[in-house]
Image (cartoon, rainbow, N blue to C red; front, side, top):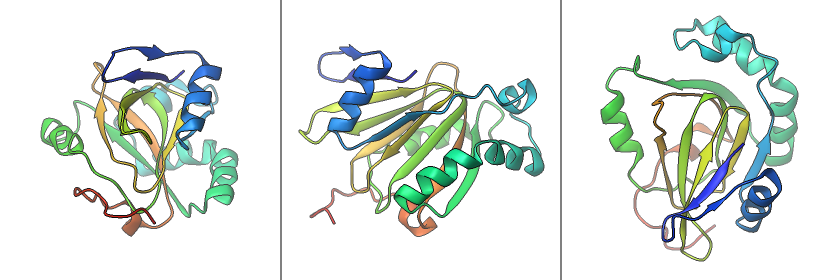
Length: 177
């Protein structure tokens, strides 16, 4: 179950309903799909073949198709970060640079943990701490960055409208589309 932590006070919002209500107020999609349908290898292993990665994506096809129909996502893939990832520390430094995208940034956490630090609608920064089973969609043009939690691993399904819309833009937007 995701938690929200405010940067300025270190206060948390916990519990599914409270987290959902807050993220709804920020126009951030949050859903909990669960991961019980995956066997231990697919859920826990970070050395997977392309076929096994596709099995994970297909295990969530119904949910992916549902949110894709609602939001216009056209592509789904699986990304894995762990201590097995070459240059993990360098990647994490890059991910911590605040940026935005011209499309939503969508992640469904299959295993591990991640943090999206987001600039809220009122300018206040907060973290959304993701656990296995959590899906988040950070809206286009919202300033944010991503990092891992203490376990230093995440396996996540990414959804895109277009690959070009996922490119990170590091400067502040002048006007939201």
